[in-house]
Image (tube, rainbow, N blue to C red; front, side):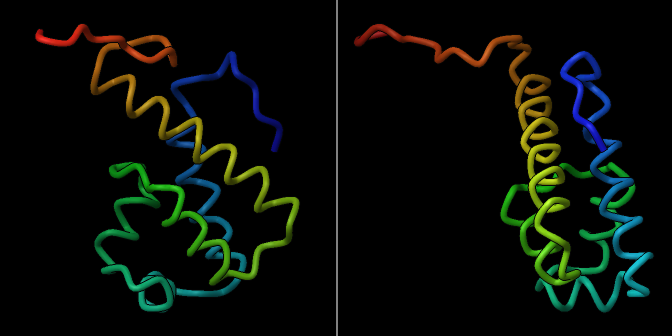
Amino acid sequence: MTLDPSQLGRSKGDLAETLRSMRERAGRTQVWLARRCHFSQTKLSNIETGRATPGLVDVELILRALEAPPELVIETTALARLAHMEWQRQGTGACTTRPILRHAGR
């Protein structure tokens, strides 16, 4: 998997697909993985279908439970960061990562 910044907007779906396929290749059920990560099965289902954007800690828990190889951990974590940035941008309407400065007293 190679991350391409020109494909921003698709990372949430790509992340969901990656996590789901990793679990399936490991031969694990959602119930098993959810228990290992201390999630509900519903939360894991929402992550795997792209209905929820997982936090980095959630992704790290999933990767650790599935004993993902280091190179896949690096790529999947980068994808999770992109998905999280996109989620934040949707919520604010912002298209920049620069901080918003506010004047005192406003």
